[in-house]
Image 1 (spheres, rainbow, N blue to C red):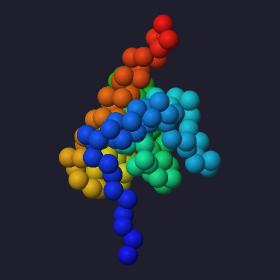
Image 2 (cartoon, helix red, strand yellow):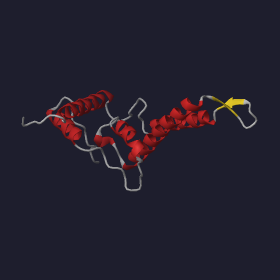
Image 3 (cartoon, rainbow, N blue to C red):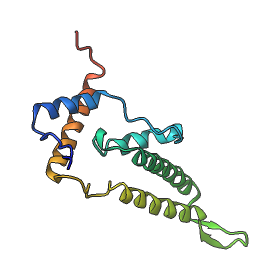
Image 4 (tube, one colour):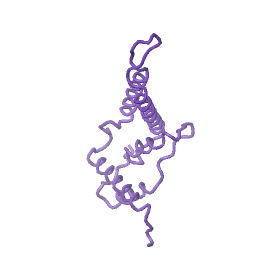
Length: 156
């Protein structure tokens, strides 16, 4: 029987070093068959930061790219809906619900389904939840520190 790889406690020095290394590393690469549009990239960054770097698998990255695309499309459709209004005139000249509202509702349901399938909406479902939460918080602190230092020279 093989032992499963155990995660270092988030309070350990090795966990803190790992968090700093993860914060300095680029985001995980998408599988080659996945296309990410330029306008999806900000959404993808947010999705990928929802987990520790080592938690992402190939299939999860495919779903993450899809979620980023859906969220980007939701913003686009919301802006167009704001411009056009929720009530528009149909071909008979009668007031009707803007078809974009149905598109936006569908995108919203799809977004929630993707988050549930990736277990991003609440329970991570793996390991000790407190330790995982602490490890994620440590990685976020390391990322914030890296972003704060990115404009400064460490040799100055």
